[in-house]
Length: 422
Image (cartoon, rainbow, N blue to C red; front, side, top):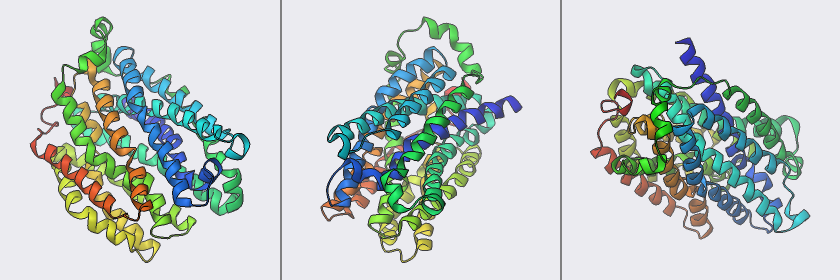
């Protein structure tokens, strides 16, 4: 039990560092977008920054293919170590990136290159991490242990916001933060990624992979093996669609929404976003443990129904929030809904695939769906806002969740039909 706990801790901490590095871009975009995208309209500047954020997602399927192959052939530990090392380079490039005033159009190109490296890294991290946590977990508590992937995923965002809050409140003025202080979190992220990579080098490999190692070496491409599981691959796409758009709406986009639409101050925006993410972190293991008792499907169906019925009124009410406290309460309610997906989506996907193709099966269809819908959520929302039709995004999100609800209603409960039990 102690060894299992240590493995979950190290795997989770590395995941937190990866997502901190990735989301530092979203958290600090409000402060550096003007340095890379000239102009006078802050909405357009944020839209340009959001487009680069979305482009970082475009390469995630490629990262999922590369690192999924490594995880299924060379081991989960190797894939996890390499992915966090790559994230280090991406963060370091952003930390030293020249601005538009220095090098002109080359500045956003450098920023894009860094986002591509981070996207490749994160594309590999999700599948390897979800697979690792599901395989080291106790069979009766897989939902609980696997939920820590999203505890640390959300925790990475929270850490980025806490760094922002400390810099805002105690160290730098707004002018300093917008001039050069925004580079600090990326330096921190690069250093943390080095530490995480060193920790992961000594990570215990899973018994599932060790038992399958001989056949893994003899097998061909895990991508070709994935073609033998079309139903499971389609399920990953369907169950991810609504959840990923909802997740990125209430995380990366919400900071801009609170600032540009609800009209909170910089500090209020950071505090409300950080508070909602902390609340979301606390919900993940609760929902994960619940899924070990009642099954995975009831939680997914609950998310689908509540998200379909309540997204439009919830975001409409949030738009009119009169105080930061009211905004927090609306976001907390949103997380009560969305956690039905986030807490268990990793274990549900891992339970669909056999060992020799599990990392690739979890990572590739998920990464493709996130690239098309999750990573673009912020850009879509800001585009609707730029043309004066912000509320149209609420219906777009609702339609995505409703589509996934259909999948949840007709899928089998993976707790009771798990490939991890075979």
